[in-house]
Every structure is written in structure tokens, then in C-alpha cells.
Image 1 (cartoon, helix red, strand yellow):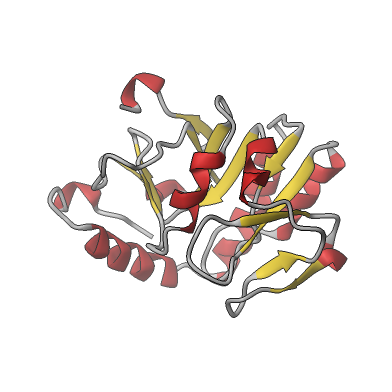
Image 2 (spheres, helix red, strand yellow):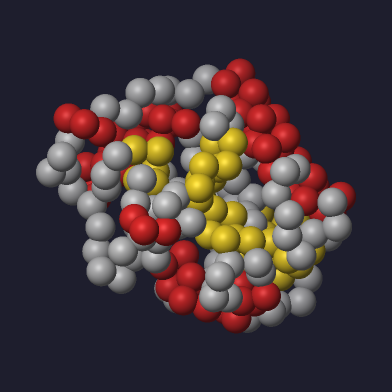
Length: 202
């Protein structure tokens, strides 16, 4: 998959999403499996007491194995629960694959344990979140529903906000808005953890 970001200097968020969705649709099953393995290996190098994560679905890179790597290292893992109405995500602890049930949206798995409320993300010192792309300033492009945008305001000050993307989805510049919460790093299959300079997150 190739993302020609340099030819889209004035592209809108919707144009970016269409381009990235097309690129993700072209990723082979073999590549997805290899990426998932690489991401699980890469996350083993991260240290956290509590981590907010997610279960990838569709063409999102990653796998449940990544969650299990964190748990085996002693990290408490929280997963999002999509609320009935648009708003910040709820959270519950992931205790293994047997704790996962079908969520509100088709293909999305969620934990079935006690709910922690939107403030649950504030318990995490590491937040791994999905993205379609991230730029070198830390600007994250999501799917557009706004669940994470509403949720990150509850994150603990100083928490590491790490978007999980493919190598080609780390781009030079994305459309940004003043309310956007900037990522502190990205995690990719080939590059591993790439920290984004704090001086650029303004």
C-alpha cells in the first residue's frame, strides 16, 4: 500500500479517508498476518501499569495477540465499550478472549466485565488507539465518528498516546483542527515505536 501524501497538500479529511480506505482494502491477508505478528512483538518493548487498547476489526492492523502480550507482561488492559449514543467511550477490563462479546457495531468485540465509565481512560499510562493515519506533528485521522476525540479529554496528563498504524500511514501532514489531541507516538509493524517530537505537537 502506498499513500502519496505529498500529492495531496490541500486534501480534506474525507478525501484522505477515501484514499486510506482504498489502500487498506488492497492489503493482502498474508501481509495483515505478518503485520499483526510484528506489532505484537513491538508492543512487548512497551512498559505500562495500565493500558487502554482496542480489538482491531476490518482492515485495522493488529490482533488480539497484542493484548495478550501486554497482559502477560503484567499490564492491566482496558478496552473500549461503544456507548448507546454518540459520546466518550466507556471502558472495561480485558481478562482474556473469553471475556469478549459482540459490541454494538458489527465486527466489533468488547469486554463484558464491569464498566468503568468514560473516566476509565484516565487510569492508563499508555493509550493505544486506532487511526487511519498520523502525521509528523502527531495529528491523528480517525474514521470520523468522534468517539476517541471525545474520550481523550479524560486521559491522564502525561499518558503516552500511541496510534497503531501501518508504516505508510505515517505521513508528512494531515488536515488539523484546534481541538485535535495530538499523538505522542505511533506504533507500526516495520518501524516499531516512533516518538513524535513534543515541539511539533502545537
